[in-house]
Image (cartoon, rainbow over all chains, first blue to last red):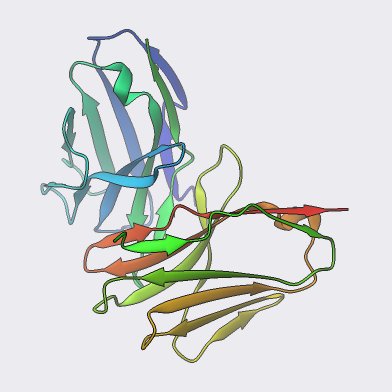
Length: 111
Length: 108
């Protein structure tokens, strides 16, 4: 049972490049989330999904897009990366008691 | 006012000490409460849920006071391996609201 997995683990982008972060969960959870974590800022919600085919904006959605084509996968896209998007990105899925399980994170640097 | 507030620390304690973390939350309609642990450069991991009646898991005890909107975590007999950041987390609807965390360093 892998839980929540994320790919890639590390990435360096130049300003203006695009990329997609993949999150997968094998726990059959309906709800999935994307967060970013920056020093001194705590975890901030970017987008979330309450089920296959649905997405919604969180606290800091600008500059990101998401898709949930399959229940087990939640993709986060950066269409034109900016240095302000340098961060650690965590994906999570929600269990039956509202607890969330996190993936190992993606460390993204935009130069 | 932030949704979830914690003392950032750091708390530096010797092995074997008892340490307590506190947290307050602003949304009185909050439904679920948790403590997460986050090690340096790792993902947050669920430490324990927090119930109104209080709950204990080994050396860890969590308490919830809904009237005061206050959550606590007590760690007894601290181990070196307890060194981490502890996140207070409150659920309201679809979302989890995270505190910024309290840093704990247990020293020999």
